[in-house]
Image (cartoon, rainbow, N blue to C red):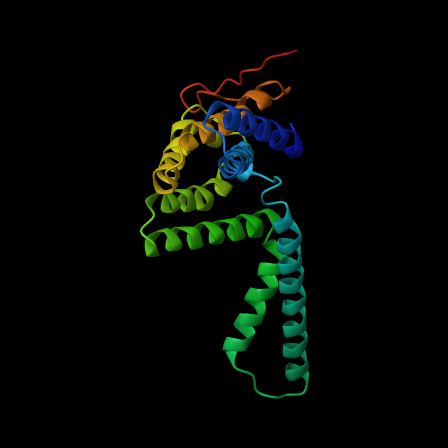
Length: 214
């Protein structure tokens, strides 16, 4: 499923919740936003609508690193042929930057950027004593390094996400946020179960992908 499809399904879940629970415009907007975000969150383990913008940034960082390494290498060559002394530290830095630009993949850089965002969230949660935000930051920092459609696409991830939602519910004192967040997350897994690749609901206990063909 595409990110737009997951987003639409999640928004529909949130809209249904706004009818089920006592209605206010503020709560309705909250339910829709949380369910829609939850419906996208499982794909933080790969390229998705949530982190696709970071692909351009990671590509830019990789190119800047590579070109910086080339410029530094050119400077070292110039100093060498002009017989000027140059510190071995500069040579080491130039070589390291050049090699990093060659070997760093966009996926690695993107994952690092997502993890940095997660660490910032954890720090904010610690600073403001919000345990749910610490848990959310940990989730964001950890899942980019997982195999796509692995642990984030399992039944075990749903209660973890629900625990984060429960913490937010307790802070905002808005009934149903935990349930809405879990249903939004669950909608993603169900939608992906309808795709040819399916979902490994019980991974790693069972590595078989479960599929439903309509």
